[in-house]
Length: 268
Length: 198
Image (cartoon, rainbow over the protein chains, first blue to last red):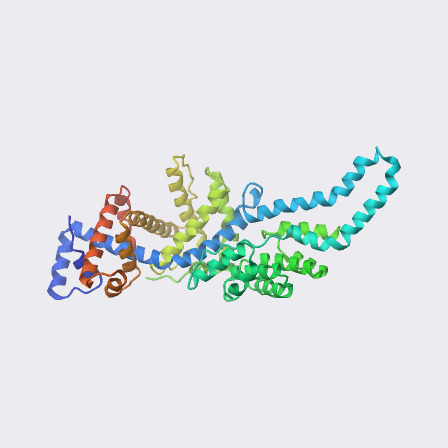
């Protein structure tokens, strides 16, 4: 059946008046198909208007939900999933064998080369000393550090500019990304990336400030910000500060495990 | 008679405002319930994650469309939503669905409100599914009209000759959309449900 949508619309918008309105109302009472069409018209309009008006908000909400979902639902299946945090955890495991290498060598080779024992002992001692002394800070931080995986789903306004900066950031061109990120002080994710960009450019004080700001807010990124803040302190050789911050990362956070691992490594 | 909103109304507001810390409270308080429920009923952790998110989105969409006054505790309302959505999913997967209803745990009022929310969301899915099947030009012009642009703005934006021709085009496209929707096998079942919201 064909309906006069012009008229239906006028009726719904309250633009039918007088005799036309009375006639239409009378028709609605007797014509079931028309009544149904009017109800459908109203509902489709209301539903789709609402759906398309909130696309940007939906993207922002999805971001919140994905973060929280990761935190509350995928914990017990850590190894299987391919999340960024899982990748970081995998990388972390490399740290442990590296640091164990000298000891492993000791046990394997001592039996056959007894006469070399003192020399090996010295060499091992020197190696351990070296590990503890200079490259310790740098290499330990670097082995834990993974740039924040920025993924902007919420787009508004200067989307082209931001999306270019996102690309630059992902390709490691932090110098190009940083000034753009500075223009989005209210986007917490972008600010996290800004801190990371500064970190990679060696602007450690600026990075620390950015991470501190995020960590003191009440977004869902506070723990992640603390994690990066701790790494920044470590890079600056402020070990005590780094430890304090790492201890602040709560055990229900995504970053808890690596924070504890790192604390462990640091106290060795 | 209007009842005063329950204190859990704060969760509805938090969802509408994307208030991360309160939304986290929702996760903190109910993720175990959802997880246990899904695991007991043929699902895994990933399903629970998706279901949690979809259920919250259904609540948000409902609250945007018309003011949602929560007169019952959030937990019961949420329970009936994820339960209903999970039943649908199991049915679609062709899996056995023996979900025991937890009698007496939540009020009937929660259930009614939840069903209204679920049906509203199902109708949205139905409408959007058929909207996507329209021609490019229909989708384009209808989107602008759903975004509340005036006929004149649409005429200028899309280069129509007159407001009248914009009007005709919109109504023809809407007619096509309604026709597709009405031909959908799920329409008859869903049709009855919008008397609740209208």
